[in-house]
Length: 354
Image 1 (cartoon, rainbow, N blue to C red):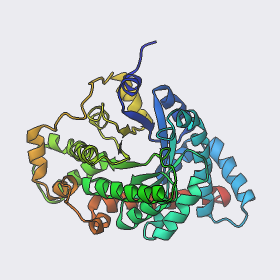
Image 2: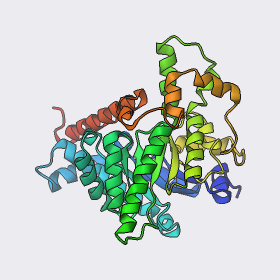
Image 3: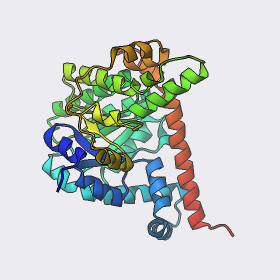
């Protein structure tokens, strides 16, 4: 049997493949490509429930009977938890094989809690109890970063989400390192913890494309495809130089460079299942490219854009600025909308239209 491009890369380099969905059918196939992790969030959960109504409509009805006082929103999150537990079970062998570094299922905290550190901490602790191999997604905002330090101290592995920039990645790493140091000072072993920091590379590309249209700026369109790649590679350089004990994760795929340009790095790449199929079908095998620089002309063009400089420079933003960065606002709103849509889906099952 011919080894696929994805399987070859995961077997011959430190680069880890995680599936950007908790859909069980897709995850089983992705594991065959070498995947050792997966993720779930309101957008993903909503798509899975819509894709498999034969499975989830009866389950939602069962949840409504089991929790008769639960609101539609609460029942929706119960469905997310059930989906997450089932996906986590598929990843347990990888979790045990990798000593906790991989084999994890990411569960995202409720985006409606993004303004409350205490609420994020409480939900993270609850999600951590769903399965031994859960990793909890918390937004990389000022409040979220405060929550990351606290839950890391309490033994929860985190995955920073709603994260697009080098300053966010550095702030997340600092919070995790402080949490680990506090935990070690109390005599706890942290070797099996597996924190990661996502950079949503494609969403940074999307935001910059929006800004050049909004501001009527002419720029080589090819350069805009490199924005997320440039930020990720710069953050990876910083992580190696400073010896941070967490890995970067590439998400929000828009082109194959969001896989191929990070090969060879001790990083996680998390393409959607369809992107995995396309990478294999096109046999994308480019070797180790994590240390290959972004083409100088593209980087120079990107440096002309203020929002790229904010995303790329180590000191481009203060922690207080993260909440108001355009890509942050746009993504938080999408997650909030998906949460409302998930509640609506549950409502249609529990109280069908006449």
